[in-house]
Amino acid sequence: VTIGSWLDDCRTCGVEGRFFALSEGRLGFAADSTTFPILARPFRDPIAITQEATLLAYPGFTGPGNVNITSNSNILGGDFLYRWQAAQSNTTRMDVLLGYQFSRIDEDFNIDSATAAINVPGIDAGTTFTTSERFYARNEFHAGQIGLAATYENCNWSVDLLAKVAFGNMRQAVNISGQTTIVTPGPAATTNTVPGPLTGTNVGQHVSDKFAVSPELGVNGRYAVTECLDLTFGYSFIYWSSVAQAGAQIDSMLNDPPSAFVLNSASYWVHGLSVGANVRF
Image (tube, rainbow, N blue to C red; front, side):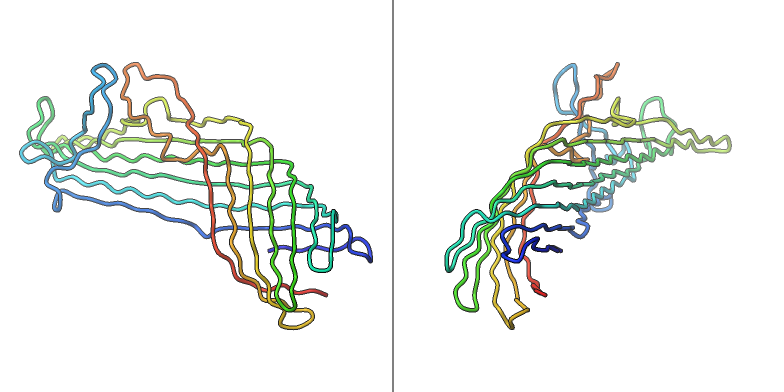
């Protein structure tokens, strides 16, 4: 949603504000020992530097077992711009854009698994292990931005082009928690809840501030239905140079003692098609 106003009668300068959001994106994965008799969660042995696995289900060793993984992501943002006319002809206009941008990217990654001991040395048969792990990441971007906007008009049709780039601070906050509930069988059954096991020193809240760059490109076509109403359709692309994603914070090394936490970030982008209407008054 974009709202703007010209500041003079000649329309050489103006201001505009914009808000955008993407509906929640969801991913999921589930598996159990009914479908997969051998079910395991991988990790890296930090000493031997080999790929190992925690066996959730293995015939005659552990089971029944299951794992359920879900991930959700949300993106929203907005900006406030000052628009100044740099050039104009009969069919073309070019404006310089200056302003402020804000965006927020939220993501969570959840892992739930369960297994039971069948014939594990040192563990009573029937002992169950239920593990729950939560990874949550929030990225807040505050930046100044500069860009160009161009418009070409031909009769009822027109095309708007947008190119801008923002420079600012990306504040990354990661919150990680995890626990395992162990229930022993028999008349003297016990229930014990312990941290982990696979979260290691990631547990807790971790905050980092990083310099980031966010370029944006857009093209938008307009058809004038009336003097005051246009129908619009277009494409947009937004990129952030440094974003912490929840799934990237999983520590695959089960060190003892655990290694220091390292916040992992990488580039992130969204793009999409849009349809709408433009009303002038």
